[in-house]
Image 1 (cartoon, rainbow, N blue to C red):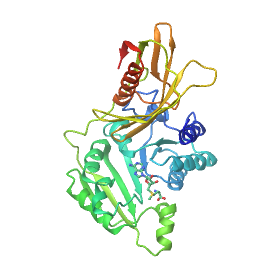
Image 2 (image 1 turned 30 degrees about the vertical axis):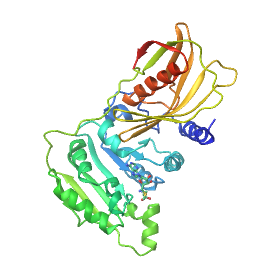
Image 3 (image 1 turned 45 degrees about the horizontal axis):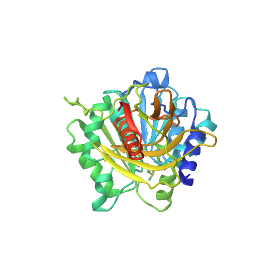
Image 4 (image 1 turned 120 degrees about the vertical axis):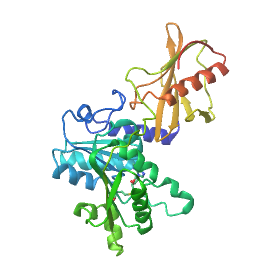
Amino acid sequence: MNGRITVRIMTVVILYHPTMLLNLSSRHIPCPAKTIFGRRGPLVIEIGHGNGSFLRHLAIRHPDWNLLGAESSLGSVSRTFRRLKHAGTTNVRLYHGSGLFILRNVVPVNSVHRVYINFPDPWPKKRHQDRRLLQSSFFKLAAGRLAPSGSIWLTTDHAEYFDFSVANGKAAPHFSVDTTADPPAAARKTKYARRWIDEGKIIYHARFCKESEPAHPIKPTITTQPGTMHHAILQGTIPDVDAFEKQVHAFDSGHVILLDAARPLGDDRLILFVRVDEPELTQELLVEVRPHEQGVFVGVMPFARPLSTPGTRAAIRITSRWLEGCGLRLQQQSF
Ligand SMILES: C[S@@+](CC[C@H](N)C(=O)[O-])C[C@H]1O[C@@H](n2cnc3c(N)ncnc32)[C@H](O)[C@@H]1O
């Protein structure tokens, strides 16, 4: 089995925590904060929290806030998890993935009190600017998810990115922009803040406040219902796999990558390691191929809590096609 996959799976296992990690697989999304946190309170999101020092500060300073951290680096989620566990906070949930996914698909319309973004990746090269977080599409999305008078607080060392963000915020129809306030003191103490302050850089801060409601908030791209994971039944014999070549398949809204296949020790099953890339969402799945009373069952294992999405549906379809190529016949499909 590919060593990197093993390490990633182990990290997910270590990160498994009954309350601190946001478990979306058992929920309908969009999902009210009251369901996620089990209580009412202002919903506050930090996108790109890095090692979690600012999130920890917010959690302790505002015990009444429901804090959601979204971070695309697994190592940073892991470091934040340890930091928060050590601090004993109970009002934070961590999501490993893009904050854009959280804003678009997880939080309901008009529900977010504040979004913090500290030292976002500046993507200074012109050709990479479409990767920047605070572009006009972000303000359109945020306008629909922020509660009335909700706001986005940006702190950055990067003058050009700051100007870019402020210009986009001013051009966005539903926001006013304030560049006169100081950044929160704790935002000047994050890992990146310390680095840039040590180098003598100026720290910029802007607050984008929602002033009016968009008539048509941006719609979610994915809505899921728990318990609707796709599967297929085939007839034939589960193939022996001595070697497996990575396969990349495109589907309507992304890619399914069959990375590797292995048989667990002393087991009749075949397990495929699959990555599914969808807009703002990457999932690493285990797809099992196992004997079943009606033939051979193909389905996504619940391990690592996958979300049922168009991408998981495509993963089952593509795995079934691969098995058909190995001589099995498709008998039943739910994809
Ligand atoms: C320059 S670091 C700043 C980290 C932290 N805020 C600090 O001040 O130390 C930017 C962070 O944003 C994360 N990131 C970038 N794009 C993201 C996205 N769309 N959603 C969530 N995290 C993101 C990166 O993984 C990285 O940890």
